[in-house]
Image 1 (cartoon, helix red, strand yellow):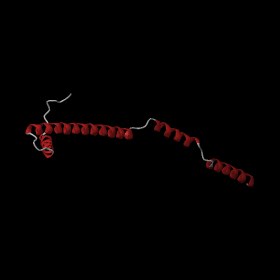
Image 2 (tube, helix red, strand yellow; image 1 turned 30 degrees about the vertical axis):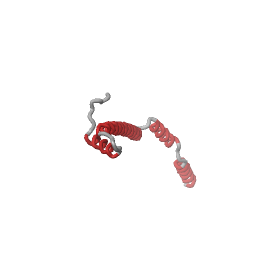
Image 3 (tube, helix red, strand yellow; image 1 turned 90 degrees about the vertical axis):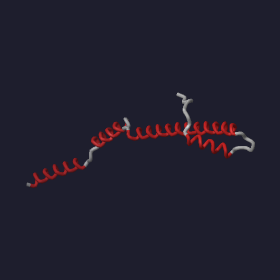
Image 4 (cartoon, helix red, strand yellow; image 1 turned 180 degrees about the vertical axis):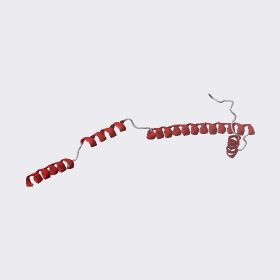
Length: 113
């Protein structure tokens, strides 16, 4: 949707006219200065549109990155579950040693009495 009937803001018009007057050549008519001001005004509007588009793209990218950071990664639960399974499977030898020592103690006590 191109807004050709869109009138520029008074600030943009004033800024364009100020720039046109500052660069005015001797002998230049008011109509020529007005035409130059209109060209400058269009340039300012185009620049503002480009900056708005860039800002929108940056905002979209920032939101996308934020969403990726907060969204759970589907591979992480599998990895953490796999790690937990490994922790359960890997057993410490301490309980077996204690069991053997206790049985050796019972057998030794039985033979002594």
